[in-house]
Each structure stands twice: as structure tokens, then as C-alpha cells.
Image (cartoon, rainbow, N blue to C red; front, side, top):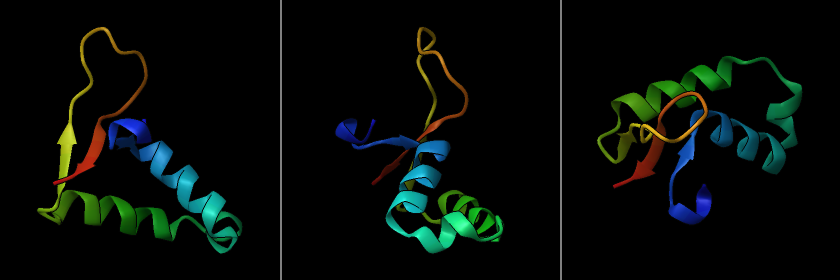
Length: 63
């Protein structure tokens, strides 16, 4: 969760859509940009879920 200073990709999308209604109402091209930047920017760290954690996808954290 955000309190752990990490979020899933879905949580990031939901946060952006809630904070910036423009993105909630428009196409998903911006989501591709988010994925691209998370994957290529060295300041973002991808963390695997623990074996006992339910859900889909990894967590992302700022380095």
C-alpha cells in the first residue's frame, strides 16, 4: 500500500485517475506511458509479491 511506500500498477492507475479526472475520462494511452516509465527509469524498483500475498502484479517503489 502507499503507507508502505509502494503501490501496484493498478493502484498507481487508480491514484492518477482520482487525482486527475482528465485521465479517468480519456483513452488508455497514458497507462502505456506509466508502464514504460516504471520499467525503464532507474529510480523505480519493481518488487515481487511475497508468496503469501494475494493479488496480481508486482509492487513499485521509488528508489
